[in-house]
Image (cartoon, rainbow, N blue to C red; front, top):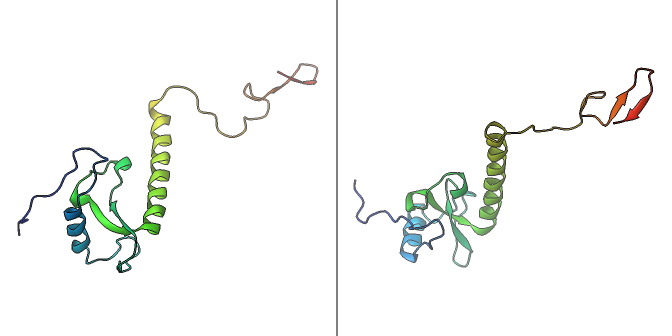
Length: 125
């Protein structure tokens, strides 16, 4: 089955989704929030959500969008941002040069702020 109208693709990632496209997305999901599964009733505030978030590599196109109630959408967006931060940290360990320090240094190592002299005395480095 082919589409009767071409798929909408945003020119930029922050391009506003037209009303006609919002209506098609709403009807494609049968008026249900894709996150909570609840029916979206008249008067409910809802957004168009990206199934794969833009910050995680998703595209700004109709096939990557679904209706979502405002509150669950905010929670999902926070999770998407947290996931991006985790991914960035992991990638930066492999790509960016330099030593990454974790937690406390091993006691007595050069990274600790203390050293033991030959006579047994412990002093600040």
